[in-house]
Amino acid sequence: MKTVKLTVPKQTEDPGATAFVQPERLKRWVASLPLGNAEKTGRELLSALYHVNRAVVPAEQRFHLLEHFGDQMTEALVALEQRCLSFPVPHNDKQHPITELVRKLWVESAYGYKALVLHHAGHGRRDIPDVLLVTAYRAADVLSRLLVHTYSLYQSEPRHVWLELHQLYRFADERDFLTKPVPGIGRSLDQAYRRIVLLSLANPYHLMQGEAAAVFAELEGWTGACRVLPLSPHTLPRGQLYVDLERDLPPCYASARVDVPPPLDGRVLDISAVMGVVNRRLKETLDLSKGSNGRLSLGARKQRNMYKRLGEAWALRPERLSERNPERGHLELAVGLSSCHHFIEDGAPFMPEESELRLRSQGRVGRAGPALSLLPDNDAPWVNEDQARRLNAGIVLPRTSRFGAEPGRDSKDIWLKVYSQSAGMPEQAGTPVAHRLAVCERKDSSRGGLGMICQAPSGMAFRVGEMIAFRSPGTAEGRARDSEWVVGTVRWLNVGPRQNLDLGVRQLADDALAVATKGVSGVGQGGEYFRALVIPKLDPMQYPTTLIVPAAAYDVDSVVLVNTGAELFHARLTKLLEATDGYARYQFVLVEPPKEMPREVDPGKIDRYIS
Image (cartoon, rainbow, N blue to C red; front, side, top):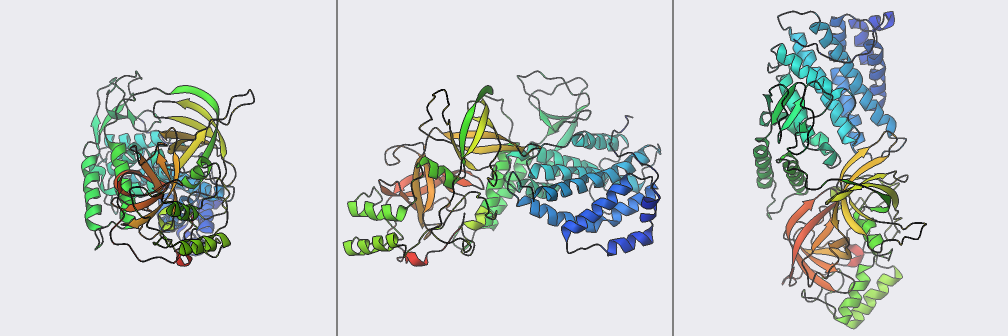
């Protein structure tokens, strides 16, 4: 039987800590905690755990303390974790203490339970006391939640956490309680281990903000879809997933083409059954969430997109088709659909209502026929002239939609922003938006994209799934600035210790056409103009292209009016190619305008939105 390797602080005699864990004193102290203030409660709990974890305390009292803290710890951590999920990436100096408090609470909780595991493991008893089942499970669960917190912030995995999870798994297996349900909990350490393994294999650095925690919660009932199988010594399971219980590494994929050392103590991972679970949950979501009109609710569409991302991550991993090649150079980077549109248009004002008036008066209407509009649907010159006068005079302010993180704005979920009428009230309509560029360092490239290192300007936020546009800024040696903006998306994100960002970017197109869209039927009907992109930069009336629009603004079968600035046409969205929390990309076909025209909308009463 191998020795279990777990890290705990050095413990010394501390009469104060020993007295603290006496039942009556502990009860009074817990009752005095400021339960309405999660941050203050968290700091009080952290201070107590810190001192007790470094003191020589009888195992029974240590266990009683940890279990006694359970409800208060859970309540504080739930509130604090929820705050962390709303923080922009990278977070600022005011937010950093909160994320650190959560991390330290998980670390100190793990120390306490690991100390108890080591205590009972050292006794060498042949029977398995219930307290060992509980402490080993708690240790694995707390370490897993520390990883979830880390993944949610896109930070690197803490040292030793994966090694300790592997060690707990093997220890429980060797002591023959791996699959035994824990008293009072009903789950086993085996289930806790497979749960975090599945999350790791879901590519957590590729998930949208907040999804790591959401996926982890759902995985509690999915662990049966992951099997941990034995592996012969000194064997590399090529083309398969595996873990090495002797190394501080997450689950790995053994490439058939790359030679790496075989695991020291390996297990093969079989997650083939998980795709059936994903497809079943996806079908349930689609079947249960449609309204009377047959459309999916907003929450169901977001959940549908998450399941699709999970399915892609858990599918069989193909061999990498192209290698990453080192490539250096500076890049200008625009972040968010609104900023990408702004810089692709060379900073031109976004005035689609005015251009629509002009195009209608010039007869510049494509296959779509007369433009369905927030503007009057007749071509009487005096009506158009009056509408133009109202727009120019500022009497009508029909558009306040802004998408993308901006300094000083709240981080309201974009899925709420799109349909919220009250969210835009703090911003006055017509207020200009400050679009900014970041300067990043290209580090490598491959056939599908590139890697970047970026120090984000203060207040500039990044998210996985965010639309970006980038180009070379030119050099002092005379290299010209690129004329076209390359369009891509943040595929994965990792935040360094100094808030420096390591980005994986998937390139979508070498260029893009900036357009404006608004819904005329289906999801999004009656809304305002949104900034959008057509990729690649080709005439959509002549060539097959795709349309990038704000997330959740429309859905499949929506008909939108597209304003290119030179032409108006209607398009039906036929297939959702991808969807993130920042944008959605659709295939579309050109269509005639709907036969039944909706009531004319007074531009002065249009719903207000915020980005």
